[in-house]
Amino acid sequence: QLQASGGGLVQAGGSLRLSCAASGRTFSTYAMGWFRQAPGKVREFVAVITGSGRTTYYATSVQDRFTISRDNAKNTVYLGMNSLKPEDTAVYYCAAMKITPSFGAWRDKATYYDYWGQGTQVTVSS
Image (spheres, rainbow, N blue to C red):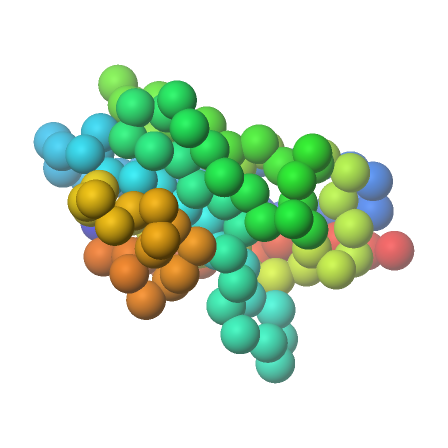
């Protein structure tokens, strides 16, 4: 079970940090990703972090502004968001993917994630 939190309303240029707490004892065996979905749009990949936390990948649109991290001792993954833009407005979802040899090909594809959180709303005003 994944529980996302930390969303809210922020002005353009501001910052937020999202958290996603996971239950279970195998957290480090899952890659953790963040996706987002704006009204009328498909869900899109934002970032992912491997089980160890050593490797991260980002969507081009958030590269250099967002930072994904995890604390395996707390079963929690974070998404730090800086320099927020109105186009970042969306519901943000955390998701978990069991790490397999196909991770490299699947890491940005929502359909391959096994578990999803309930989403947290991020609204950026101009």
